[in-house]
Image (cartoon, rainbow, N blue to C red; front, side, top):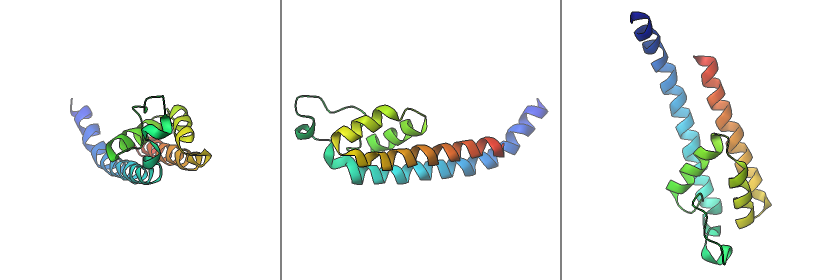
Length: 111
């Protein structure tokens, strides 16, 4: 039991730092996503279709969308965002995916 508690106490510090940088990256991309794409998620753009539940309309949905992108499910959000706005959405979603995964993979090396 002492070995487990010792390993846990040694990993709390690096995990806190990496978690801070990951949350900061998600926050920055969520704010950018809301500012860049929030105005495109309207009934007028989607016409007869329903606005997708994963969108950049407000900060909370944008935060969850960026988290989803970082978790690896980025293709459906990319197509939806490209359909709502333009092809330039790829210049937002791919860096979010790459930077988020770089932060997560650096946490594996740290531990």
